[in-house]
Image (cartoon, rainbow, N blue to C red):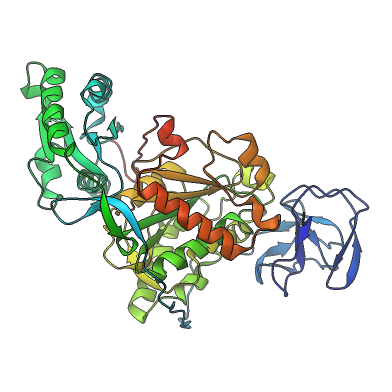
Length: 493
């Protein structure tokens, strides 16, 4: 097994792929280096002497600057390096030509809906318009399990605390996310559960919805019902009768939309899991499919790589706005733009936001940026899309689903059991995590530093995603988990 790696020829640091003891002699670029201290897995060590305020190069780009002189072979982390990022920046568009050659068409088994959309699941969703009816929704979910029949794969409620006491764009965002989920093709049937007096009541939600099939979407206002649970179960029975007749059929992978997200990252995330997802993204796009990359604050420091891959000046300007609008969101709340990475990230070997962002953006592969989406905006362009959403795992994954993702690929070096409204594939950056938390992790990319090459591993991931799209349950689905979270951006009345 490879024990350390220099990622790019220009790098001034290497990364330990397994714990390295002090005094270990490593050989890199025909040069022997003695480690001056123990280097934990995923952490960096210096390949040359660095002066104070010198850029630290990893992935071929600066990931921060030194706070003090650093000797060759020394551990380099938060104690002796820091971010070099500023606040709002002015960007220059230097277009990078990155078109991908088409590859052979692939197919999965999906559900074709009456509006022409395709789903990878045939579930019944219960969507509350307001947090006041959350407990009613979860009670309905429990009682409705006995109604499952035919091709119905799950009946799930999606409680959330919003829908009232919100103002302006904050309230509109809640309405849009709920409307997006109501229209999501992974749901063969939807019960929209309102209270009656809330700001985001059913009539308001309908204003944000596209035309819908009345057999597929039902509405219930609890204040207008003598027995809301009983009435809801009758409506769900109708939805099951309708959606349960749906059958899987062969669908081109050009119709697949896959969201990409990372969380609980470690020093191997940008070396194994994220590059594998990036290669997967390129492969799907080469077959006419679509991917969506989000968590904008974790693009800070690597954003120019994405900006220069925009297909034209208009998309570039939208990407600049995507980045700067999110920076303004931080400063408008009197928060530091670069208050990242998290404690778990640091423990795993990530030292600065640039370090984290360079690893995060590996998930985008090499395809040109075709679309730039605001929060809650449905995807319209095939190929690689960028989506405005925060780094929070559940909020960002819900945003990906709301924009149309059938499946979310979630890379992690620390592990997490959460789910989202759509199948959420957990991808480990290291084999130790995969072996320890096999009840959470669906796919292991740790083998990339154990002898498996990137092309082989990305093809294996593609095959696995096709199997998930065709009905294979991921670990969180097997556990019965269905989660969602809405991005809270304004005041509460």
